[in-house]
Image 1 (tube, helix red, strand yellow):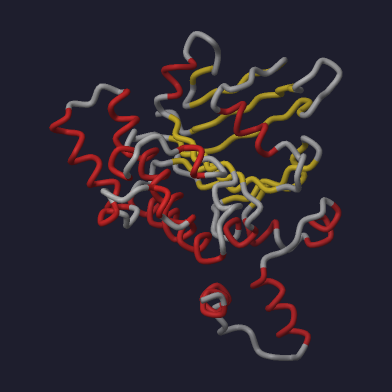
Image 2: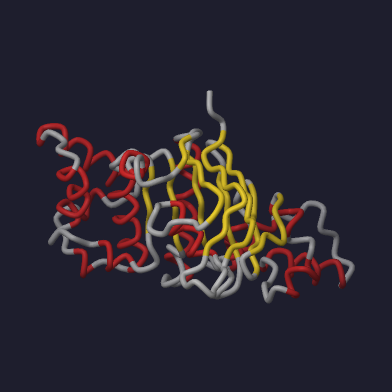
Length: 272
């Protein structure tokens, strides 16, 4: 059984002939893994997302999705396995109501009408938006809009979910809602692979693995607790450490015992 969701092998890419964003980039993501890709603006994060869904083509090397090489011959069949949620949820809304929007992809996939309503309710319920099905998307909060965008994506039953800066336009409450939703999805479907391209350091803290990209190269690639202890390297690439780590440092500096402190819980309470 294939245990690699993504295999990137020595790829080279640039938007222009005299430009190279990635040079000899190699990277693997396992099936069921939740990976956060972080880096400052221009590091190549969103370019990577576009390559994974076939919006751009590599110059050299190859990308495999669930064991199949991503190319012109199988791009459409592979896209059926991939769901993507973008930065601005308004750009993903098609329907005049939440129900219509979730139904859009199902209609394109020729799902029977009698089956469609059940699927719409199932995924609206998963993202806690069932009571908003007949509401206009324009009347929703940013977090609610993003939940609807995720519901529409999940309704297509993807094996790989790519979230491209999907919380960057949200307020702290909206970001927290999406983090909680992501954790719920992981618990419900252990085989769902999630790639989150993000600026949200606190989200990255919850991932199975954090990949730090700088100038098209992977500079750190490990578990969150390992990556965020490398503070000097993060500063070099203009990234910060999570608030909970800063709090830990302050407590230690003031000789406050920290062994029994639940930092994630404490931070969550402080951000309410």
